[in-house]
Image 1 (cartoon, rainbow, N blue to C red):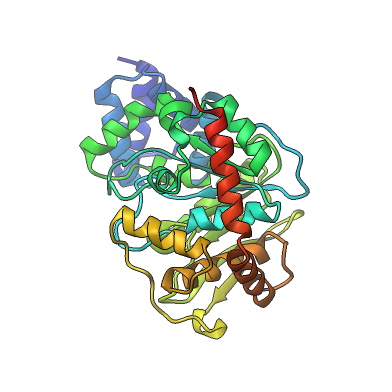
Image 2 (image 1 turned 90 degrees about the vertical axis):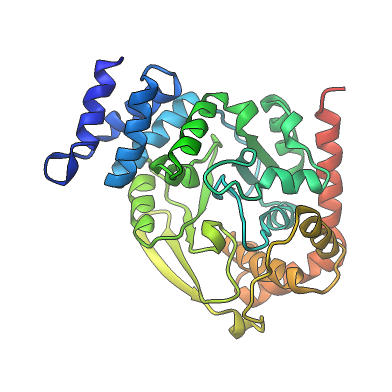
Length: 353
């Protein structure tokens, strides 16, 4: 048993009247002790559920990010005119709506906007469709690419994927606790704003509950991150919804921590107000292939809605209408499909024979 960890557990688990928030340094220590197995299983389980009940603070999230920075992997800076986008998407996947982020990443990389994604396999608590399965369906198997080779692929194509089971195996034990507890601990919130990239980055994260925005802003501010976008997206992802107004928070400038609030109404841009339901993985991949072939359809509408926004937000296009037009051009002229072929070739070239 760790006496140091026991004191941290006492702080977060003492209830409304006597409980305390952790400092940034204490939060970093707690996460490192859990990842390194220095706390006992009883202590780790108690901490995770107590911290969920208490709810995390922005300062605690910053400390957790510090721990991941120290122990976790990072892709190294690449030559780029734009900061790399780090997409923060829930690791436990999707169960109700069709995701589009792999297509968005391909579209952005096609025009020179680097994108870093991260995640694992089917994971608790939802055990929904993870990004890794979608990429495999598209022919890109990130599970067999070591970190050094992932760096090469990232440099060559502008897309990198941190696959936790291989690149950050220390997290494996934490997923087992999540399954047993049946609830997402605050680590699941922190992971959305984790940026496993050592260069200049633009952190884009999805969220569900409005208070999460404030925690994100505080945590990133403490860590000196000035470029961020928070999206109240589909199932907590970065995918813009079509069935409601998209609520988005934007960092206003490099020199300011002020936040701009943006409301995007799909029908104002000619989109129907419906999300594409999630069927089987095979059906989703087939629909994505149709999008990449430039064929019209509901998923194409989702791809354009998201692609147009992210082309504008990354500074490639000056406004939404031009972003939408550019997204349509890239998807219909075969440029995005060509980027997928290039990515597949590069990943296969780096895979073990």
